[in-house]
Image 1 (cartoon, one colour):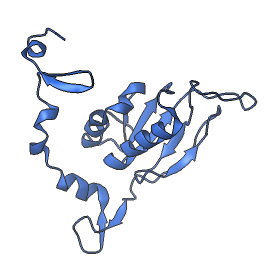
Image 2 (cartoon, rainbow, N blue to C red; image 1 turned 30 degrees about the horizontal axis):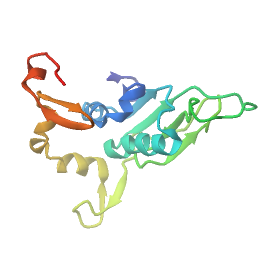
Image 3 (spheres, one colour; image 1 turned 45 degrees about the vertical axis):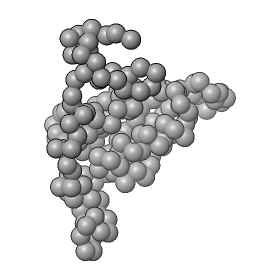
Image 4 (cartoon, rainbow, N blue to C red; image 1 turned 90 degrees about the vertical axis):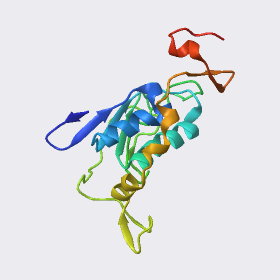
Length: 169
């Protein structure tokens, strides 16, 4: 996390987008903007957009993915980098988006403007970020920090070998 003259920023990279915990830690440390350089093309544009947008919404932060694009004259084909360099607001809206092409996504943002929503357990309007942090229940998240779990065939398994530094399948 870096504190700059305009606000606090965090940085994640490429495959980190698949792990919400890293984005959450940066947000809990006060990040207001998370930059995300990547060369992503893995599960396609719709899936990537859903995941990267959720990181902004879940953490009430601006997320700025930066990716390789293609020349405006070249055809895009599956497997190529998606680009989608953009600025995504805390509400998940794309404030700037380059699509698949080269360039620089630019948007003016106001870090002092809270995301106001209706309800969140309150009558009337509520500050989404403030209320979301207040409603967290970290005491129920223990499994996220326990050692001794690894994944085989897509399912978690408990093993003492991981704790001891050995990996057995």
